[in-house]
Length: 401
Ligand code: PMP
Ligand code: G9A
Image: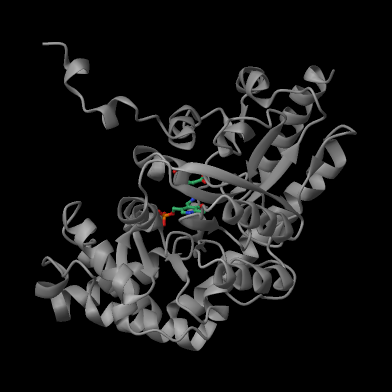
């Protein structure tokens, strides 16, 4: 039997996530990686987690080790709804919350419950690779909206929605990472947030607000969540503990209208029955005992230093004609090389020089914008940032036209 003939059409068309593939390559110890979006291991609250698990095993061992409901552990969903109310002014109850195995799973569930082949999905250009991976089997057609330093150009979004309406068409959803965008590092301004909400109301379109980095602000003033500006249940909010606790727990939450939660629960039942119960109890305690609020400033201190160091190094070493974004938070910045340069071709030379990045074209469904790349500044040590930027500068200089 030729196994490859046995696979379904969907399986035959599956493509690897660029980031996941790169992760393998960059695990070679001598390569300095600015590629994967990994939290720094120093940011993991190991002692706190140990304390919480010890006490949970003593008091609630039978419950934390048992299967849970597909929706998630009720007391954790209550803690999440309280956090959404108190911290972000989003008024929801546990019935609006589905706990998922990472927000990556939430993206997959959204594709499964909303997308028919050919449905239009509006994305920022560039966008998170993981949505392209999660949605690929459902074959949407992407409409890309440019960004600038204030995030998605909602004037261009309005034009797109208007011309779609003229043709009797409408997108299924608008997917955005408004705060410290992955990969661009930019943040949507307040005016644009309000405009986006108005557009979603006028054109009756769902918004997916993916917010893994919102807590990690190093400069500038906090901005309201789209979800907190939402009056009509148009916003589906995705939050995660991957960057403020640990990605190993795979702990995230999808917050939406009850009807959406109900459908997503049905879809999730066939995938994994329920999200990791131990992790949910740990995350609940992490919130309710106040550890989360104490810990976030420590992560911010660590990452702010790394962001500043990388920006200083780029300023000192990158050749003229190279541009990059200056993020107020999150984990990434976005580099644009002079026209005509190709970050994909340059990648091999970079690996020879023992430094890695993510090729920018991977963040575009059509794989254009060859002269771009994404750099992560949270995972490398300070020394690696210094040495790695010098190596990368050399690679770029050698490739300059
Ligand atoms: N969305 C965005 C924008 C991300 O950057 C990431 C992780 N890098 C995810 C979703 C997935 O995060 P997780 O599954 O760990 O919650
Ligand atoms: O390890 C992953 O796949 C999550 C990281 C995402 C990213 O680098 O954007």
